[in-house]
Length: 391
Figure 1: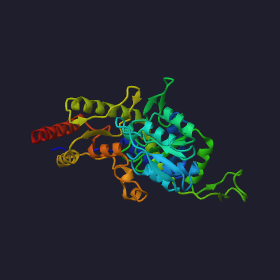
Figure 2 (figure 1 turned 45 degrees about the horizontal axis):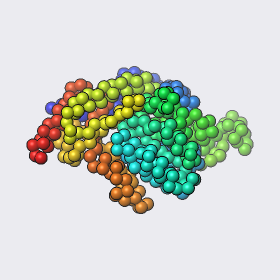
Figure 3 (figure 1 turned 135 degrees about the horizontal axis):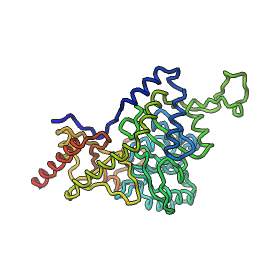
Figure 4 (figure 1 turned 90 degrees about the vertical axis):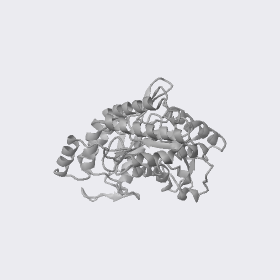
């Protein structure tokens, strides 16, 4: 039997090790030149004006909320099918989180339901919306922007699953996540199971200089050395804390790792797409397995490959017993005990809850070998055969 196969895994190449080694031996371990180098490289890749590196994706969400001036009582809409940080980052600023159910085909925030929610309340009821590019499927940000403009909302796109993903807008232009053509800011994560791994790490992209200035200020304690922002200036050493910020900095050796990882992002996306095609082909003849549906004009980043099955727990247990470490993404956020205390209950998000009962993430990462993937497929098929005999 082969070694256990995780649902996701980082890939560290020799060039990564060399880059980290060289940076560890340099003059800067943090607050050095590798930060700006990675920011500029990532901004170029996304086709955006600014990129701000931070120590994780959750910090990125929190900084985005701070930069927008989110205040206690502001109503912020997001999806329940996401890691809880998508909501928590705004809750840290006191926002009231309002969940909106998902589309049963894409598993993304349902824009029809969102429109109904917005139209049922006076304009100004909601401050903003946090769509999540779940599993790597990009939200149709053009349509979302039209709704946001109509109802006065800002948009922070959580693309932690989706660097390099694209959708085609009404003009026939391919819009890549992070370019911020239709959104105010986009959030990325560099956790090891993501496309780019820096251990822990995150990034915010934007085309808005005012937001960029606030992001960089709040990332470093609210401290500035810019003469035009300071009340006094005693000399070259002088700085002032002009607002309450945080230490959300990333290190130079993490940035050095990220620079090398970014160079392989297109390869990672291509390999992930190949793995998804193989899964789709193998499961096509199995009616008991629902595979991901992707619109023709969408480039899916495939952070996750999620199937839906009738007996999810039984398949999960069977796969784990046979060394396939499948995972569940996600427990609906509105059903977490913390959010239940604010009145959310089972039945509030019927599509998300039905999805949760049946979803299972199979191994998906670029170094998954053909042999390993075939083993995963065989184990799923073996379970399906046993399932059909029992039924």
